[in-house]
Image (tube, rainbow, N blue to C red; front, side):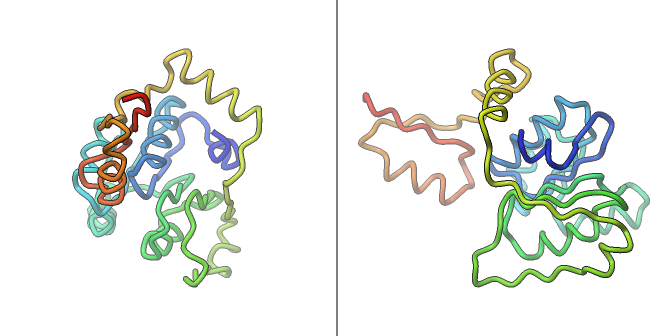
Length: 189
């Protein structure tokens, strides 16, 4: 909620979500709830299928972006939401944000990784670079309202419920990322 507020996401914008893990999929759902056109980008085809199921208008592997642009099928995004820390995704974000748009770092690379920012290009195109880490009480209240009134559904994101004794398996599923979106550990089982 806070990241999209900072980026000034509003109706009829094009939002590109890079990374279709739990955070990216929540951004897809929230942007769709705001009647935005959503482009999901991920290297994992299974996650792209899930992004489509959750409302992404377009879901592509990173290498397919350029092909779609060459064919005239892609427009630049008003907001690029980086929900991955992969350096190639960050490099693509600079290319896919439209003039006057914003790139939001919702995930950041490790501190030993160097991010190259094309300042001259971004300066002439008036691109905003934002980070989103903190959320305050108003953001939490809005999130809870979105869940309570059914605007955002999250139960469909839970792919696995495990008893406490299988916690290690839950960590493996999350780390692997292939078969799971959200794993719930039931402490009372």
